[in-house]
Length: 141
Image 1 (cartoon, helix red, strand yellow):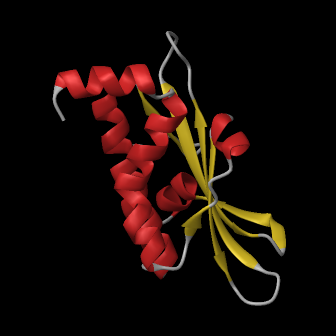
Image 2: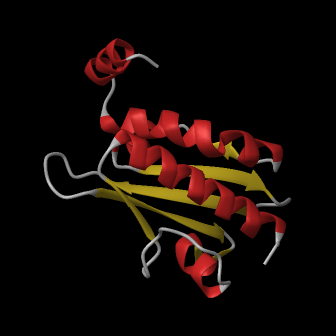
């Protein structure tokens, strides 16, 4: 994408919309291939929550939540990824922590957050999280 395209995109999109686009580029296909679909809830996305859901039959669903904390003009922004089932809401797995527990190298901090301060860092962090999410979902570790 040219710098002109990026500047136009920046004028037309909020940071939450840009994050959503980058998230879908990094992890959308892998999640869709496992039956997950983004719940396109404007209120959730406007608050930085991106939820992917997959039916498990009956009323149960498997959920992947990506929570963005965006800090305009301040320190680096960050996001975390949690995987859980809505019939067991207390059993949430924080992806970054899970990766560290399974000795998978990741730039996520000890609390499970990926930090970024630029578009390039965001892309790299999302790609790392997407690779880790695939490992967790297929039970590789």
